[in-house]
Image: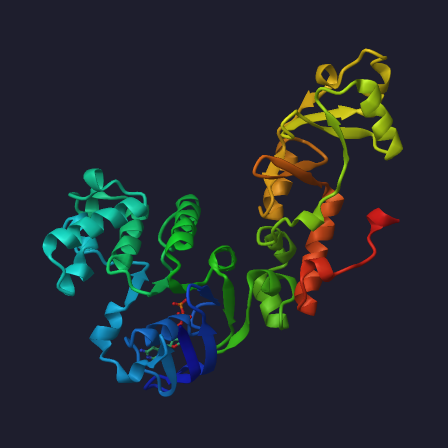
Length: 387
Ligand SMILES: Nc1ncnc2c1ncn2[C@@H]1O[C@H](COP(=O)(O)OP(=O)(O)OP(=O)(O)O)[C@@H](O)[C@H]1O
């Protein structure tokens, strides 16, 4: 969808900002360009909408060599979001958002209806905010308008230069989440520049880590964090990359432990027998529908006598995460409930539990899988837990 073919940009003063760059962004993919200040990220991005022309090499958008496309026409197919947002101060939010559709000749009513729809999509109620002026919005709201405006003419490609850079960390995270939700629905081909590795990891399907004018590694967030290609990348992603990796590694059914399970309606004696059989000290308690209720300990079930029932002994426990959630979320829930495990559910169906040992194993398995270029289920290793 966007393809760089041996692209070099040398400025008039001799600075080589981008050096023989080749990479491709697939349709519907979000690629983040990350690196320190001055490494050539913005230059790379601005060559895509021809605000900067390459010194050599070619760039293709939707299969077309952009050197042959009229820059004005090209830019209509490419949404552009920048940190300073650049809203027109004397136009309302609705009119600002409708800028591009109006420019390309849409009827006013249609352009405004589309603008209202997009404001809604970025979380700004058009009836509240549509008639305001930019100075009457917060920084975070203005950035949302920037995103809405870039999407207004429904371009297939979106370029975003530090789009969430000018707001505080809390708002920033909120905007990132909203943007990810929106991107899941609209599936634009996105090139996003950031100097923040956390943002790159959170947002990118793949990340291009820049050294000086060159890409040092181009891979998934998990691979960049798990197996940095060079010492430079390792240094750039930081010593806590293991922790960062928790947030991009998702829980798979194979990661789970199958604990003893007791039914809420069961007798305590039967539940205790089952726990003894499997050498368990406790069992997960499920209700008649198979939904998570909590847990019951072996000792209390054994002590309850012949008439004891699980329902009277079970402790409520609500520590669960959906399958596919990041490991970090599971770890967070474990800490929040001060628990040694969390249940993993598919909808309301109980799949198994994650324990700290299993969590660690899942993380190691995913690092090895990336290093070997295979699926996580194909990786085997001895773990302390098996000893
Ligand atoms: N018009 C210009 N003339 C000369 N050199 C330039 C020009 N624009 C950028 N540069 C240089 O090219 C290099 C890459 O700049 P670029 O703006 O692409 O970096 P960046 O990675 O986006 O940095 P930042 O994160 O600070 O925005 C830098 O060394 C910069 O000083």
